[in-house]
Image 1: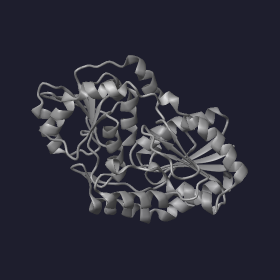
Image 2: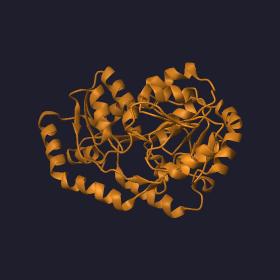
Image 3: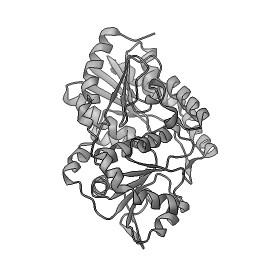
Length: 362
C-alpha cells in the first residue's frame, strides 16, 4: 500500500512517535512518503533518507514557560510567505506518488491533500483526546473557556477522518465513533531502558524554553538534590555544572539513561516525555506551558491518577512538596500496565485496510 504520512513539526514528540510507526509501516511492506516541518524533518530524514518532503509549518515561541503570542505571530509569517512553496512541493509529489491512504499526526497539509484528492485519511496523535472523550470537571478545572477553545481548535484540525487513533497514558470514556485509545508509542531505546530502571539521587529536568529564572532559583534552593537539566542551554557541547545543577547537551541516549535512573522528573506538560516517565515508573512534576491546554489536561490526569503533581509554576515550596511525595507516586506507578491495551500499530494495520475499502468520508 502507498501511504502519505504527515507529521506536525512543533516539538519533537510527534516526530519520535511517528518514527516508530513509520518503521512499523516500512517493515510491513508499505511504500511511505513523509511530509514534515521544523526540527522533525531532520530527525525523520536521517531515519528515512529520500522519503521526506520538508514544508514550512506553524511554530510557537516560548518565554518564561508561556506562549508569546506576538513572537509566535511573527515567526508564523514565514509559513504564509512560504505557502506557494508548500503547494509546489505537494504538486510535485502528486505527479509521481498517488497514495492509497494518508496518515496525519496532527499535520494539516497532508490532511488537506487527502481531502482534495479524495483519499481516505487516518488521524494518529494524542491531541484528539480533547474533543473525542468525556472529561470530568475535576480534570478540566475552572478554566472552561480554555477547554472549549482547545476542543474547537483540535476538532476543526482534522474533521471526518476514517479513524482516530489516540495515544494516551490515561483512558477516559470515548464519546465519538471511529475512535480508539492506545498506550503511548515508545521509542525502542525507551522500552529497552526498562530493564535498566533504578532510582538514583538525581532529578531529571527538561525545559523547551532557554530562559526560566524562576525554575533555576527553585532548583538551586534544594542544594542537596542533584538536578540534570536538558534543553535550557542548547548550544553547549559538554556538561556545565553550577553547584547542584548540571546542564547537559542534547543526547538521545544520555537523556533516556538519565530518565531511567532518575529519582523523578521535572518538566512541562508535553505528552511524549510524560508517557515515557509513566512507562518507566518515574514520578513527574508537570508545569504546563501557559496557553497550551493540551499540556494542562495531561498534567491534570497525571495528578488525578497519582503518578505525579501538577503545578502552575515551580517555586521552592511546590518543588519541596513534590520531592516529599515521590515514593508515594512511585508506588502508584507500579500498577501501570500498558500491555493491557491494544497498541496503536496493531490497530493501524486494521484501520488502513478498513479505510481503503471504505474510501474517504464526506
